[in-house]
Amino acid sequence: MKKILACCLLLGSFFSLKAQQTPFVLGVTDKVVSSQLGETRTLNIYLPEGYEKDTATYPVIYLLDGSANEDFVHVAGLVQYLTMIRFMPPVILVGIANVDRKRDFTFPTTVERDKRDFPTTGGSAKFIAFLEKELQPYIGKHYRVRPNRTLVGQSLGGLLAAEVLLRRPSLFEQYAIISPSLWWNDQSLLAAAPALLKANLKKPVNVYLSVGEEGDVMKNDAARLAAVLKATNPQLITPHFLPMPQENHLTILHRSLYAGFDTLFHKMVPPVKQ
Image (cartoon, rainbow, N blue to C red; front, side, top):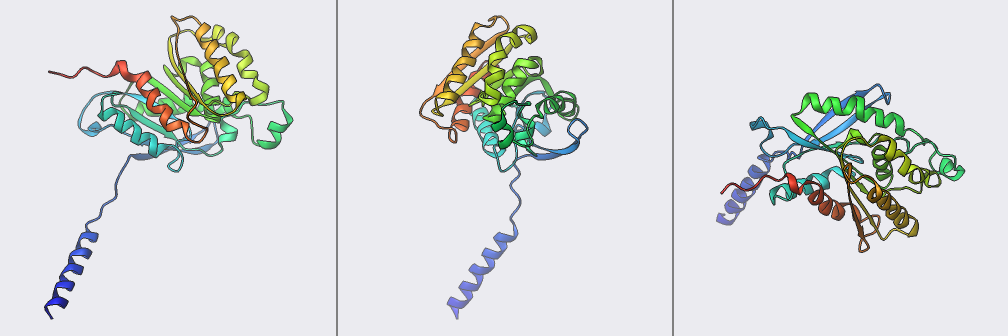
């Protein structure tokens, strides 16, 4: 009888503990109605520790491929960790959830195979307008931000980030471009890069570029872009190129961003008060 009573007490304790569960909250989700894109877009937002209790302003990282089941969760964890160990300052992370990344991250192509493989292609101009005219103003209105904005993109997202850097560089102060798909449209963006930077780059930007062991085309294109950046006026661009031959297209993002955030943000970390 005593054994039965003990078991009942243990079970009661177990169910009591289960009843005390609460959700683990990583961030907040906002919905933005975009007239530029003609649809509602989801934003996953990570706020730094203590955000609700202070009046400070923060840099903002805009993350392409920022859906909950894409890159937002693990990049938010990386930001939290690097902030904790003082490799970067506290920041706001804005993950832009995808609707159709092949549409949003590509400009029009003349290559028939691209058109066949990407039937909704060619919407990057509208997406860039969304970033400039709707997303950045929305974040500036609803969150405490300072004028330091970083755009992060990999693969097709890297193509989009590279296009913004070359065509509208003043939209962001920093760029993390990882494994960019510069092969798009027979590498037309890469070929136009020197002229685009000369025409459009008017204020300083900080650029981190990385590529893994991802085939000769990806590696060579990244190296060519790095060379273009290096040859640009050093008063207007600070380039950082990090090949990562130990990584492939699937493994590179997290490990590259570890180095990239340290590279882009380490000078912004305030000194420790003695």
